[in-house]
Length: 144
Image 1: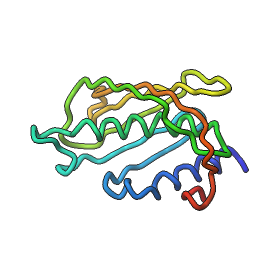
Image 2: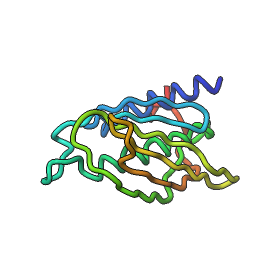
Image 3: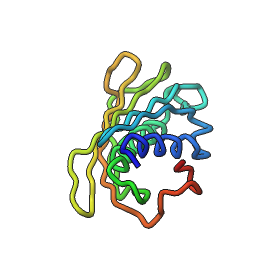
Image 4: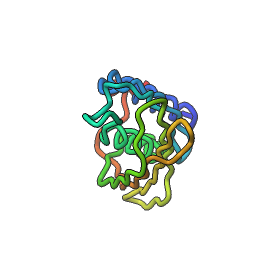
């Protein structure tokens, strides 16, 4: 299987996850890099009228996660830890997270992700650690 085919299968797997019916994201994966876009809707707001931090986390973690899984072709990776820094609220438009691998070892990968609003202003930043799981990448989990 080519690397490009692996990336497209990961994208289809991501989009098939039931949770994404709520967020309606878009995804693009390349080697060591992934981009997630989520259109902002009022259903994502906290009581203060801006996007809840869970949406920030999802975009940041997902983009970093798939940057990591772009290097792993046989199993699903797992998030070991993830830290988020919130820098600006957002309440409209589309948010875009770009994750990239910054370190790889035999057992762990570290990725960072930046989240931008529609004006290309940073609204959050995150870093995560990822490792291989025992869950095979198969059609049963949407890897087609």
